[in-house]
Amino acid sequence: MQEEEEEEEEEEEEEEEKKKKKKKKKKKKKKKKKKKKKKKKTNQRLSENSCARLWTSHTIMTLPAKTIYRENFEDEHFTVKHPAWVLASYPRQMLDQTQAIPISAAAIQGPSNGCMVNT
Image 1 (cartoon, one colour):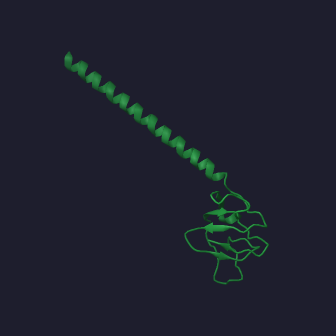
Image 2 (tube, rainbow, N blue to C red):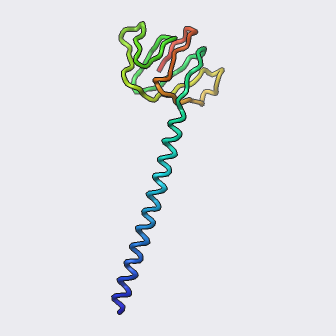
Image 3 (cartoon, rainbow, N blue to C red):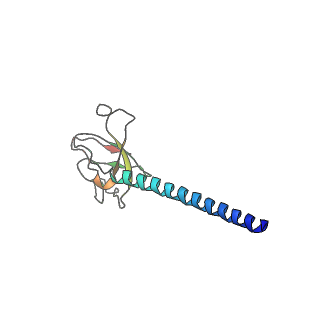
């Protein structure tokens, strides 16, 4: 009789542990979904009259007034072949130096005021 009771208690404990693990997994999934939603909202365009600094895995120097996604510039060696997430920050007079705006590389257009887009 005691053995049966002990076995039942062990089974109950195992079931409780399984339930706790499931709850933890659900919480992790919810957090991941929230992060994904935030990333989707960040597609933005730079204003035409601003210079931007871009940071990617490669150093990029572009000329103004053309999109940098699948576009050849006057520098014949520069072409972006893959869409990539980059960080752009406006000049100091427009935003604080600490503020950065994540945008899609496909959405970036060079300014028409003769500024260079540097990364």
